[in-house]
Length: 155
Image 1: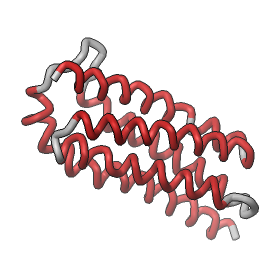
Image 2: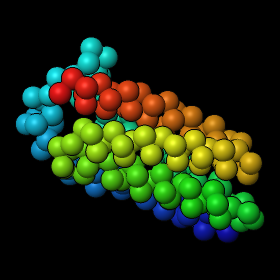
Image 3: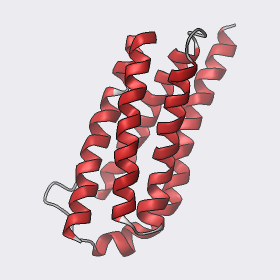
């Protein structure tokens, strides 16, 4: 029984981390070329910070959804909302970096932010710890939304 739970935990963490890994294929080439040519706001963090930050956030997201999956009752809406925000997360890098479109990236990230909040509200009803595990993600995406907006406005 414990091996099954551990396997499920590892699987959902790997799923979340895979979103970041796949997204990085769109990001890596653009960082040194297109992204480096953009005007960025004074609060833009160094590029090296994004990888470790997202790795930690995907880990927390994986643990959060695992706790919801363990509930097994009345979780359908929460799981659907989580998957929608995860899909929007997945799409942001191809949209922003792949299409080189800060505007479409901004639309995408605002939708992602909305669905993160909806996910957290649904999680809170089922497992408060799951909702709290999403707080750093909400904070980071809120910051990333401001950064995306500033890049759009400056360019």
